Each structure stands twice: as C-alpha cells, then as structure tokens.
Length: 229
Image (cartoon, rainbow, N blue to C red; front, top):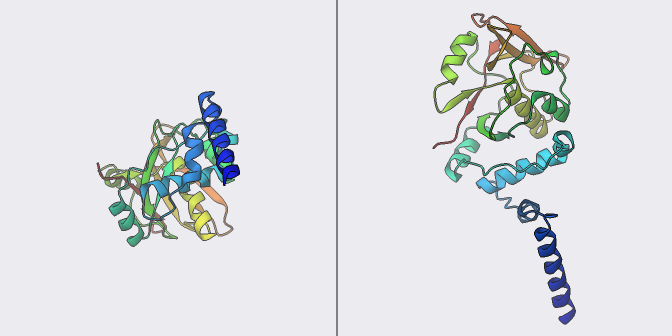
C-alpha cells in the first residue's frame, strides 16, 4: 500500500511539473477524463476532438486541436437524436484544403481562387440531418439561401459540407447525396455563381459553379441548425 501511495505521489508531482513548464496543458489531461455518456455536451465535444485527432488533423494544421465547449444543451442533444440529426463542429481557421486532405476528398473547388473562402473565425457548431439524400428538392439557389439565412438555420458551405461528408462516412460507411446535388449557398463562385456538389454513381465527389436561379428535381439542399442562445 505504501508503494502504491509513493508511486501516485511521484506521478502527481511529475504532472504538476510538466504543467508548470507548459509541456502539458489542461486539455491534455481532459482527454483522459472523457464523459462518454452520449447525451451530454462534454461527450459530444470529446467525441469530435478524438475523431479529428484520430484522423490526423493536428499533423495537417500543425497545431493542437482544442474545440470550444459544445453549445447544445442536453435537451437539444436528445432532440437531435430523435430527429436523426448529428451534431458537428467545424474547427476555427481550418480551410477547405486542409479539410480535403483530412477527409481524402479532392475537387478543383478546393484550390480554385474563384471559390470564396468560407473558413470559420470561431468553432462552428451545428446540427444537421443524417439522411442519405438531400431535402427541399427542386428549389433554386436563391430560395435555398433565403430559407437558410433565417435563424435558427444557417446555409452549408463547401467547408461545412466536407465535415458532414466525413462524419457521414464515419458513421455509415457510405457517401451521402449519391446521384443528387445540393446547393452550397455560403460562399460564391466567381462574382455571382453558387456552388452545387454531390457524388456521382461511381462515388466520385463533384462540384460545379452554377447560376443561383437554376432549379431541378435532382438538386436539393442541406442546412445547419444552430444552438439556442
């Protein structure tokens, strides 16, 4: 018993010294204290941090990934489960090139300078449907934009869509929106164009710049639901 007590004391002192010297940080300790009850904000944040780190995001962005606290309440998390929604976070200052590398999804739109950059200044937390195909089919890009700009909704960007695709594949092993397109209203292509994206029948990711007045039966949308303030 004395031996165990001495070992614990030595380990505690070592950890304290490492933290004083800024070798360890509180977030490093926090990852070993995960609350994996599936209905808590802390569990959601911990799960997503571990997912991103497991994919190798810290090697790609060359910094430590620490997500902000999940802003969704336990009630909102329970509602998301009932509504077949996932809760995701697009980390701040992570661009589409880095996301493309992380999720192994390539497209000309990732590097094209005519595509508006839409990375986030702060961690962007959102809920969205985990359906295999989009909703609101047959609506134009402008209609989609107007609908999703009103709170508590927010429109998809290419960056947000890449995160959703990565998570959908992680959970289901499949790609969403196969042989469908969705509007990506946040961001622009050139001056007045809007992006549409989806997967073809060979599971290849495709993105096109399109006129926002266009609509078609195979073109729909996804949207972000924001946390209650």
